[in-house]
Amino acid sequence: MKRRMMPMVVALGLALAACGETEAESKGAAEAPHAEEKHQGEGASDAEEAVRPESRLAITHDGGITVLRAGDGEVVGEIELDGFLRLNQAGDGRHALVTTGKGFEVLDLGAWTQAHGDHGHSYTAEPRMTGTVFPAELAGHAVVHADRTVLFADGTGEITAFDPHHLADGEVETTEFATEHAHHGVALIRADGALVATDGTTDERSSVTVRAVDGEEIARYDDCPGVHGEAVAGETVAFGCEDGVLLLKGDEFTKVDAPGDYARIGNLAGSDDSPVLLGDYKVDPDAELERPTRVTLIDTETEKLRLVDLGASYSFRSLGRGAGGEALVLGTDGGLRVIDPATGKIDRTVKVTAPWREPSDWQQPRPTLRVVGEIAWVSEPKSKQVHAVDVVGGRVVASWDLPQVPNELLGVTG
Image (tube, rainbow, N blue to C red; front, side, top):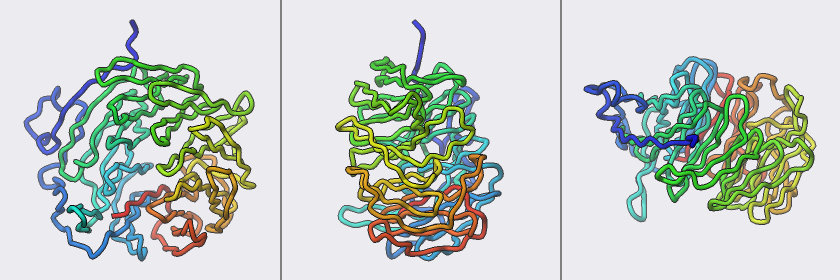
């Protein structure tokens, strides 16, 4: 019987990994910092108590990462890193995962709150790379779900999972899995411990599998061509296909077909406050770069798909969800559209940036949307700014100048 996915469980304490390991013991582990660089846990050595939580933004640029205090735009940290950098939520509201040539490196944004019963204590510290690295060949998707962060290495098909709430301690236990073939994939672990992951090769991928904690395959679906992207609505997990969206409820798969023979929905955005998912929508299989003007709304309860015409194109970094479940899309006309996910109506369009055009190289800077708390943040490379948008109020409430041309963007509420 052909093996599709086999779990390899490894418990590794990062603080103990700096010395005295054999090669077999350290293989696949997150690399630990040297002793003098060791992360100081919840109480970083330069931590100061703050009056209130402090939101911060991490913004990549050519040559590194700039960290801003979101409240006033002050630069609180500059980190030098070479190469193309991507930013992913780590899952604990404090750290970010930076994809580099090494894999997933951990960035501490230096703002966090410790809960103490009915209140909390907030702290700030200097942003820093902690020295922790989760090695991955061609680091790809990072998914946070059910208190687990799951990383996918496209170059090997390997999957690494961990509890992100131990990142500040300097010790992280990882669970590892191996897919049969390397591919551009994505995976998550459900609350019941089951692993949900794509399956395919570098040439073709169309399958999603569900594996029990012991590694046994309990469900499989093989007709989701070009499977890409993932989102969750309630207990439903969704994956984009080139002809619709695949929904997983429990261990049962359901395909929601899109109109036409080809309709690629490769990027999805979910919300805890809505059963409706937001997705992109491309219809030209031969386009080198299609600039779509419609998005999809997928109701996971009714299993129906709705198209919404925006009147402007957008990019893969244009989709987001508001704090109340609003579907947000940043158009190339500079307008942030706020869409009612239940009706598909565009409630308002907030003018945020100057008109822009999506570059042909996906790694090149373009306006990017990220939601942090109740604020939608939009970067604008042309003006070297980042803008704060009050989604409910429908207006730009702040704009901060940046020292570098921004590329990717991520924030924490502190």
